[in-house]
Image 1 (cartoon, rainbow, N blue to C red):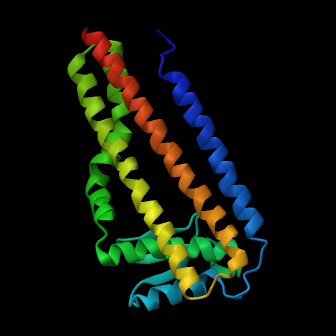
Image 2 (tube, rainbow, N blue to C red; image 1 turned 45 degrees about the horizontal axis):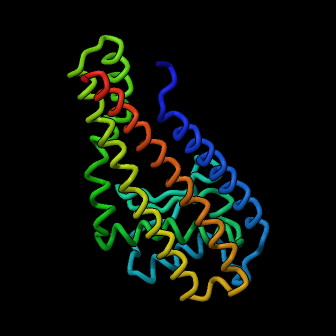
Length: 227
């Protein structure tokens, strides 16, 4: 069958993912125009939060990847912020800068789920690249061992995405807590912070749902073929 019963749920998850991505962009653009009353840039917020936690050796750099390319590099211990976040004093820039610092704090504290996700990364990276090829070849050739290997590798990639969820939610919670604690965000600005960070979190949920549903589809096809 060209169409599988799980495809309808996968299509729905894709729709949610596209909607979530549009919410990330729209919320960022909206609150990038709202100046933070604290009048500090993303760079200043990131540096202050890092210093508050004794992470003086963690650098804050300008990302060269463009808008919304903000991330924490655990290997080089660097928080990289995109231009709008790095240099502007907006509610959006404060929110995203604090979120990325949240990952740096997780790393420094040895946050369990971050460590678990890091352990999964090599196998998950291999699985995401090779599993589709193995699955296609296995189904075309009707060779069960190849399909089984493909499903196994894809399972690790899915587990990595599921492990990403608590890591991202925790980083956002840390960001909110620190922004409020240090007075970088006023009561009236909390709604903006929540909208920016919650929309980003939803994209991870949707991506994990798509991957999990695809895995379930492969397992069902494989089980059906064996029967």
